[in-house]
Image 1: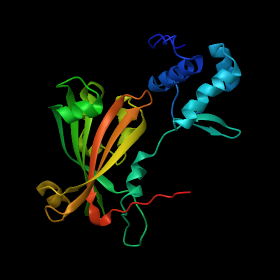
Image 2: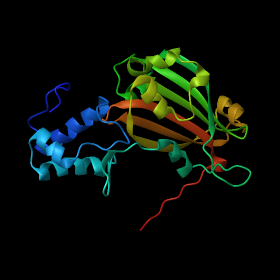
Image 3: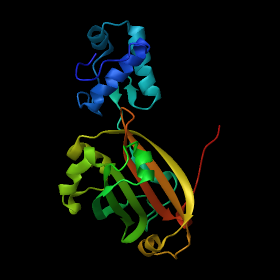
Image 4: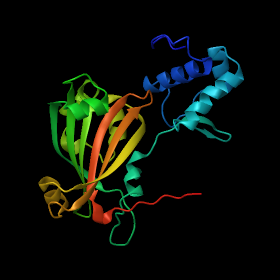
Length: 245
């Protein structure tokens, strides 16, 4: 097992201890997303386990969406493309009817004491500091989403010293580059609310008009919450589709 991590819980099944150790390698940056992990033969020698045990550990990571197998190429750490998730719910197209990822602009950044809802979402100690970002997503000059993002300051305080114009459209690669924090999974909750005065002004809609709020908790490969995000968009452009078979 990795000597840099805390000792594995010997009460856990061996395959689960292998799974946790492999995830620790990703979190520590030893294994990088998009790059093949060592071969099964190399890993069985490294861990001193049977091939069946190793495969069971990898299977759990594949089933969780954290790794993917590529025939003839090996097994890779999966880098999820979370920015596309908004397109499952909001239809935003340009003048030619093509879907595009909206541009982004950080409107405001601050270092704050986390309120109770943020503490709960990020599993932080009471009154922990968080980096708060307010971000506008726009397409062809039209504002389409207003976002509030909270990040544990203990992991993301570096972002307070970066020029706002240097924040890119895709934040998760930016988190990795600037703070060494890898996002591996996320969960989202949708609610319908009434537009606040700020949201109405920013999105060019009437105050009190229905908006859809998507709350996301993004987690590291080790399951620890890294980001809490609330994305607000007009209900007029919202659509829900699910395929059932």
